Image 1 (spheres, rainbow, N blue to C red):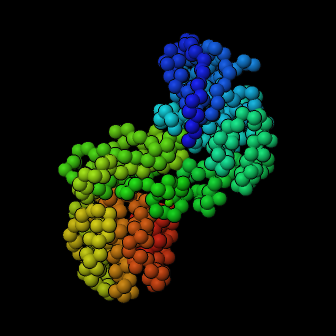
Image 2 (cartoon, protein in one colour):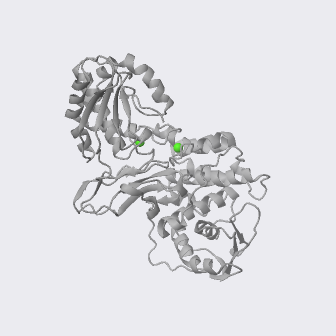
Image 3 (cartoon, protein in one colour):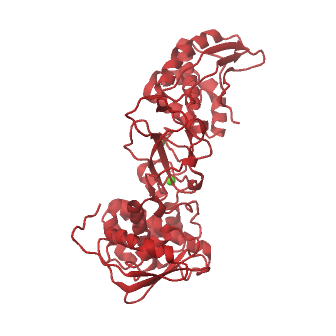
Amino acid sequence: MWAFIGVAWTMPRFVAGPGGEADVLEAPRVWAAAAACVGRDVRSHAEVTISRFDKIEDGFAGVATADDVGLRLIRLAPTALPHTLSHEIAHAWYHSGNPVLNEGRAELVADCVAEQLGQDYAVIGGEYLILGCLPDLRTWDPWKDETLCARAAGYLAARRLFRVGARLVGREALLDPRLEHWNAVAKVLRTDPRGEDLADLVEAGPKALAGALDDEDLDGVLAFEEGLAGSDATRWDTDGDGWWDGAPVSRPDGAIPLRRGARGVCLPRVPAGTVSSVPIESGGRVGGVLNPRLDTDTVLFDHAIRFPDGWWTSPGGLWVRPAGATVDMVANPHCGQTTNVTFVTSLALDPSPADFAAAYEAVAPAVYGALGLRYGPTRVSHNPNARWVSVHCRSKDCELALPGKYYGARTMVALATQGAAFLAMTDAGHPDDLGAAGALALLRDQFPEALQPNLLGAVASEAAPIQKRVAACESGWPGIIERRCK
Ligand SMILES: [Ca+2]
Ligand SMILES: [Ca+2]
């Protein structure tokens, strides 16, 4: 993003204090990356000592010490991650302004370093903290915070304030060394109408700012930005298409979003002839990690991939797809619907369950095909005790039920299409709410006739009690088909 070709960077000599031997080996490339991010060299002591102490000041992962000459000492906690080294090195540039400027800009530089050096340097986790005890950032001083809660909230808010500010007015504008006081930052923010609102929020006090900088749904989009975008600040995926709010707009063909949770997502298509391993390309953003690289332990059996456990408290989202799209791709045999589908009913239906099964079989191959999945055979049976027409898929927990009363052939086809979409999504490894949401997205995209408003209206009375249960399941499903909460 920045080009400073021909400029010679100078940097201090890094000297290991106790425990700092590995850090001094890393420090030069972190310094070089930070200098490129800031866009200028900076004066420091000729030697900067880096130590890892058993104990540094309570609650800090690292402490940088600078004087009139510049940075001279970095002390890290034994457990400090590379991100902390980046942050403390960034204090070579930012240590003489007020604390929110120092800390927020050190975080901006650390983000930039992580983009250059890779995710090992990114900040991960900790974003679930709430900002309830946020102090007034304009006068904030982490060394004077009376509680660890206030200090943690101050750091988190400083990071988020400068991140969102950088998205509005550009990172360079906020890294300008001439900014030393909050009023100067506010002036920069106020060059953008949205930045003006942000500056107003800071000046309205910590309560208003805490609300604006909240990311309750951990989609990486702050409440302030959700307001600008018109998305729901309490839903990771507002429109229910499976992609989180703030997901990259352009993404490669075949990319599928991972659910946040323990359940894996089955890759719908895999390279032909490979069953035991599939190279995965990934993208998105989690915490400070741009285009995260997945570890192999996130790949489960049957080519199902799950959101890495260690990243659950980091905002954002991930997509994956099989790498090497030039090779022959086939439907993932492990995701395919391989068992019978059974419709069960007790009531005298009009049309009959057999009619429904025929409608289902007519539409299901196309629905499964839209996801690159195989479709299996159907079996119809009657359960004398059931109130519903049920569809069972025994390979996975994809049971669903349909209301036992229909209103003509078109509605029946719509119901059959919806049932097939839900089962197909579930069979593809999209369980629970994402399965329902994905089915809805699939229907909107490719089978819009299944979602005609008049059809929805025709079964509205049937749908009402179902919608209640669906709401209880926190599902995005529109309400015609009941999904049982387990
Ligand atoms: Ca959010
Ligand atoms: Ca979405």
